[in-house]
Image 1 (cartoon, rainbow, N blue to C red):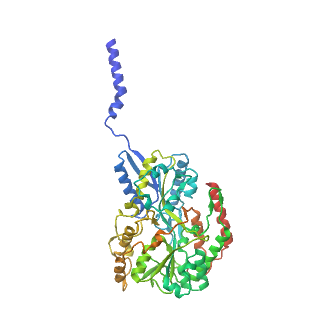
Image 2 (cartoon, rainbow, N blue to C red):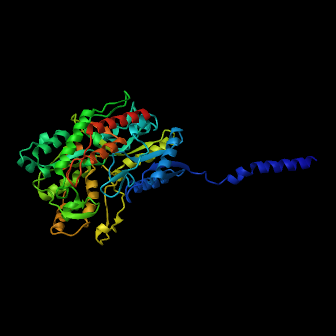
Image 3 (cartoon, rainbow, N blue to C red):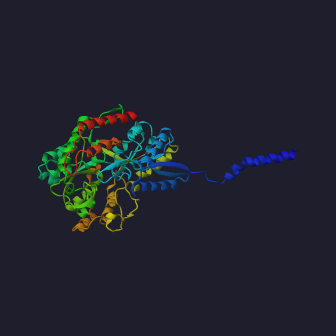
Length: 516
């Protein structure tokens, strides 16, 4: 009997230990780092995220990075955003967010703007309506202990004012990756020939628009158009619209009305001459043509006289400043780059891409390790980007390896030392034509390929910044309002009550602040 009991006991003990014995030698399941991002162009931020994930996983064998791209189909996206927001509020949301801000333009994401046709744009809802408000509501993890102790990051090379924008009460919650601000590009000789003052033109956006209106010059008004505000970042021209500490809307409706009225009057004056004005883009300069979108949505190419004497200015953003400097060098012209300030004289930069760690992240130190890699030279300066075969119809049968566009909207926050590598990346756009061959195109291409830019050629890179915004969804409401102010094809002003529009926008701001 005793022997039988011992046998049963031995069998019971063996069975009890079996799962553990069988588990010996098996690797533990990997820890998952859940990253949420937007879908981007073919070799944009999605490719960089995959590269960073591979390097991170190699350095952290116990981790697996899962990158989830937000859907672009509206119904599917709406459902996904509801699910994510519910998870975030319950502390079970994504570990890492890698997102374009609400005021990012075309290269931020393929889903942010969808042309229907190219004359109209449909905006998709972002995950965070206002990243700063989300930060203040505790949706992100404080990574300050990791960032402050990161002595190998080379933080002295990062744009200091932009980087501080993601902090609150000593904590660091948002990590800016790229930024931009509006710039007035002016031909010094041509502006002076018109009897105008560069100092007055560059004082602020209101002075620029009102000077253009006073000249009555159709082409000059075309150069003064605030094209960047038609897709976002219009709030950068106004005093702060929120006082987050006081929890109230501070937008001055009278200033907004003045801005809208100035924009409408300048755009109506400029209408009909968009095809003949220049932009600091390689395509127009090299090919001598520019794309013209007609009222029926069709597309054609028209001749363009790059840097014509009667259009001595244009407004764009910091990110195209090297292009302008290179073309000016090739043309042996003196161009001034002037930061376009807002009504109160402040220069507001817009964060166009950012990262953050979710407040409920179980692996915050590793999540920071993942995010910091986007601030390293090789990623900030696009040194790991792959070239792609150019097989699009606009290539006219050419199949060349090249870059199509910046990796994302804006300029690298690793500003110091950025000009050489980013100019090298931009130069890949010059290797082959992308439009119809025209007389002189090859000569212009050779001049640009030979341009040797130094930081003295692009001093605006080191312009002190007064304010920084991450934008919010109402940037798009303002952009839609601006697009509706005039008919680009007929030159007729749209019958709108700008005072009513300003009131409606203020109400939306109050609702957004209240809703959180």
